[in-house]
Length: 282
Image (cartoon, rainbow, N blue to C red; front, top):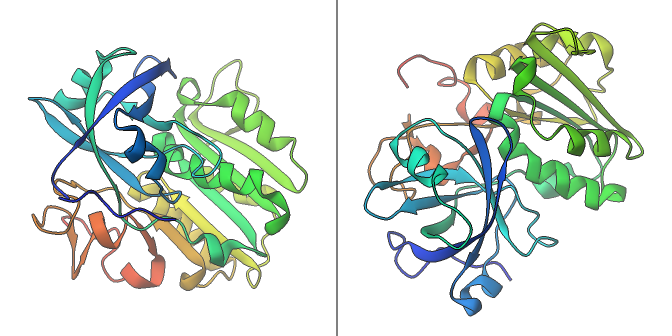
C-alpha cells in the first residue's frame, strides 16, 4: 500500500544512518532507517521520487531515493558534497540521526514502460535518480523489452557504480555503454558527449520510451538527437533539477511556468514542459 507524505508535510521524521558508503571523493551513499519501526514498515515510494533530508539546525536538501521500493529494506540516498547542508551530512556516520520527510513528487512512468524498449540516458550524478528505475527493471526483467543504458560523465574518474553497471550489462536484452568528455589511459569507452553513443545503438521510435536524467544542457541535446531518430516528445521523460525548498508547491522556488518541479515533477513527459524546458532563467 502506498503511503502518503507525513501528517504535516513540513515535519521531518527521525531516521538513523545504518550504513555509509563512499562512492568517490565527493559522493557518498547513506542507508537510512526510520527510528519509528511502524513508520519505516509503512513507508513506500516510486522510483524517481525524492525525500527532503534535514540536518538538524542547518537545513534540508532534496535527495533522490536510490533503493528498490519492494526489495530493499533500507532507504538509500546518494549525495554529492556541494554546499553547507550536504557538507554537514557528509560528516555524519552510522548511528547518527537526521530528519527525513517524503516521499515527494512524481516518479518514472513504470506502467507505461512495461512491454516497451527503454532507453536510459544519464549524465554525471544524474545517474542517481535513474538507478532506482534501472534496478526496478532489472529485477522484473520479463516485463520490459530491450533496455539500453547510456551513461555519460564529464571526466573518466567521475563514473560511479561501475560494478553495478557491469552486472546490468550481463542481464539478457540489456546494453550498457559509457562516454566521458575527458577520457584517460584506462578509459576504454567512447570519448565525447553521451549523444555520440547514439551511433552505436538502434532505436525503434514506435516501440521505445526514453528516460533522461542529468545536466539540462545534456538532456536538451539528447532530446534533439532523439527527435532526429523519430521519437515523439510524448515518448521522452526527463527528471528535472531545480531549487526545491518546500517540496509541496508553496514556496515557488522551483516553479516552471504553471508547474512546480517539486510536486508536479521532478519527472515530466517532454511534451508537458516543451515550451519552457531549457529556457535560461526558468
